[in-house]
Image 1 (cartoon, one colour):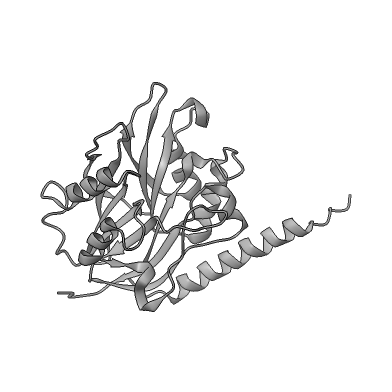
Image 2: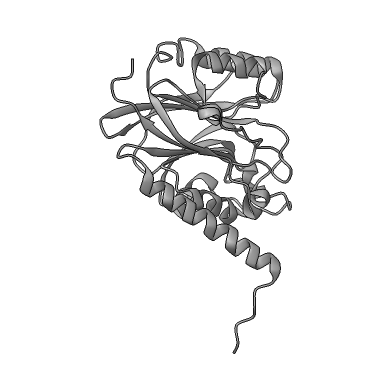
Length: 276
């Protein structure tokens, strides 16, 4: 039986996916010995802009980028609305990675929160919920991993949409309970859906301590939300002085516009030896 020809939309999807895979492979070949790739992505509980639940689409978005460290927000664990699956573990299995989930709150039928996935083992330094004056609880997680001889700290969070809570949550992260003693560490990454527009108070405070990878080398920063027609830059990766930013991108194609209401942010980083 003859194989049906691809229609125009299918051919476009095929070309976009293969172009992304080719670019990711080229970047992998060009990277220095200790370079690694970080990706932050708000998954919207794996419900796409077509309002369809599809975990495999989110997995495909991540698989095309080949991250070594993947920070995911808005994940369900055992909730009825998501088919009672553990989305963090299912995505980790699809990507052959290890997952660590941190719960933000527990509705009656399961848990909801954020997760870090890694190609190698993560050591969790701290995790928990951040301050809030309402019912919108947010979680954060601080992990440490090793790249060659370098010890990397990464703080991942999903900050509130409310300005007062968002400001208080960032102050808490910068305090002694969390990063107060680590803000001078040369190999620190802060990432996630920060709900902070450029030039907002939260963004400015982060920028005074860390570098926005999208601004590295004078690159044009790309918006990340809403995925179909991005107008706002809410998702960020910030790094301390001990990294060279090799590349940064916001993948925008037919798949990323469909899989979630946010676009991912991806950065290739190389730790700098002896950064002071």
